[in-house]
Image (cartoon, rainbow, N blue to C red):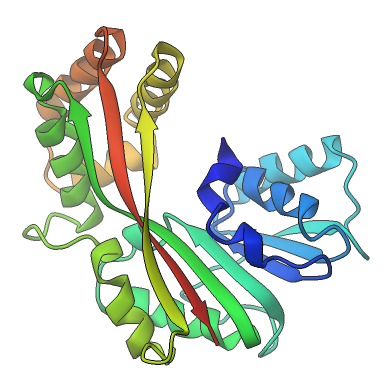
Length: 259
């Protein structure tokens, strides 16, 4: 399922490519790239030490080398700081759901400029970010309880604004990519969770994120979302997962840009 998220960039990956996966999380996609860049080198970066340990363990279990052709390494790094790589290092830079966590316009633009810096000439920057999501049946109220509250948390309680994913074409242009010669392409992807096991997994993830002590829950509290609203959200997510024929859909902005 993880590699479905990168299907829009897979046709462009070459055997010897040097790939950077930004905000790699547990490393599932990072490791999946080795199937396509089998003689290349893959680097996954994240700001979380804990999640990088999981990624390293996953790579070790797969017996992947950490140097040379076909290697995978994971490093702690922040795209909002200067990345520890020289200019023009990578053939492909990929990130999924990164820019939704960066309130527009300054932080996403700063990140894009830095990602462009480490990209080789004619290299590809590929990004994937949500622009809309909905839970059905709507009578459960999750479009209000989850979707709207998530937006409030991402914008740190500021008035509602467009998600960063909706303005990615404009941000790519401002970051220095040539948007008028076919070197920047915008397309749409989708994610659907409809069968019982998929609903169960999505609910498990959401409920886990809203547990006491989790930074995700704290971001909601910091945005002014009350404990009562959080408990209502948890109850609605649980009911949604148990509701026959309930489903979830999200629309994704998928960007490809050549340097």
